[in-house]
Image (cartoon, rainbow, N blue to C red):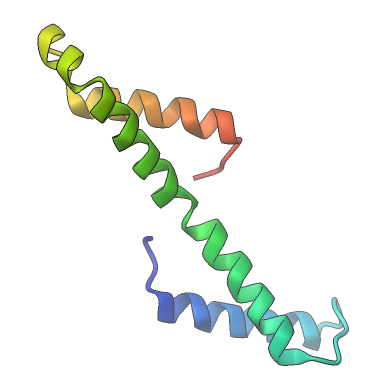
Amino acid sequence: MILSKEYVAYMAREVTKQLLKGEFIETTDEPATLQRVHAALLEELSLEDRINDEVRAILEQYSDEMRKTGASYQEMFKRVKGELVRKYKAVL
């Protein structure tokens, strides 16, 4: 993840505070709301990490074939990652 977990926690607190202040949401349990916002931010921000892990797993399966054909790992990584981003309709 590009951002530290501490910064994500800070962002969650600030987003929750602004949502409540602007009366975009109502809640009787602010800590639970903060937890849900934090979890949503973490999940969204860790999406690229999960995609990168999946790309590595796919390329590991084809490592012998890539060596035989002389394919560039970096180029294949970008191609496979692009395909997975489209598959998951992710915005990175």
